[in-house]
Length: 102
Image 1 (cartoon, rainbow, N blue to C red):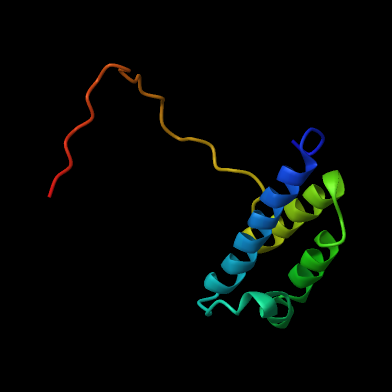
Image 2 (tube, rainbow, N blue to C red):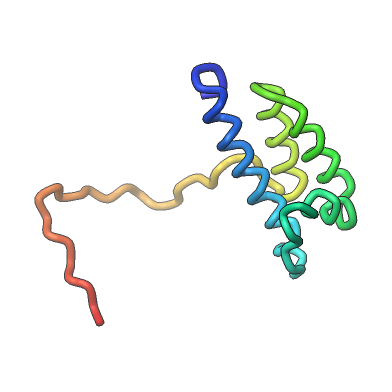
């Protein structure tokens, strides 16, 4: 997507960065700062993470992706989705979904 639709990729990266910043605070049991103060507040609790956000804001393409991956490793401890731990189950395309319960 980085190469085929850079605008969409940048929007997705922005969403990921926003979520990572939010986790930096919630993971420490702290309230979320206002959006306009998020990067400055992040610098107060994790200067390196704040520097990565600032670097990402000046980048695009694969460079931006690499910086967001580095930010994810720094704040979340991971940069990929978890592997599914259970076997897949067959789905009957003609099945009627169960009725909602009250």
